[in-house]
Image (spheres, rainbow, N blue to C red):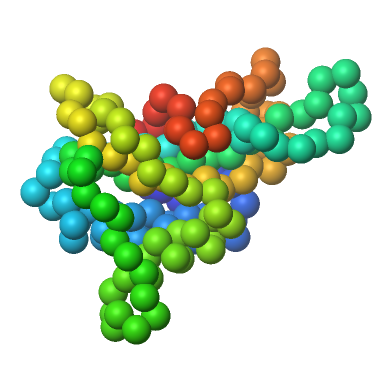
Length: 156
């Protein structure tokens, strides 16, 4: 289902596998560290990458689009798990997310989106959408969003 949604958004096939791995890492963290703190939600958003530098070729430069994937849990006070090369089988998930997303990831303290609002956190990452797909997906113009905060969910 994730692969189909990302493909629909125009994410390159090579990035789809990376995105699936990153979602798996974030879901695993939510399960291991916040299993008793529901709800747990997966959000996918099509947004604009703010702060992107594009040399304008027309009066309106094209937007740099990205798909943001976020995993929400209701454990707002939890610290993210640490990383250590010597920690055995655990502790590398967020480093994998950081590397595969090329640093386009973060944590947002927010409310759940499905059902009654519950305070918690969403750990998110972003993958780029090629310019041709971005133009097809949003011919009327981009939706702006903060660089650190995912926009409202488009697919749940």
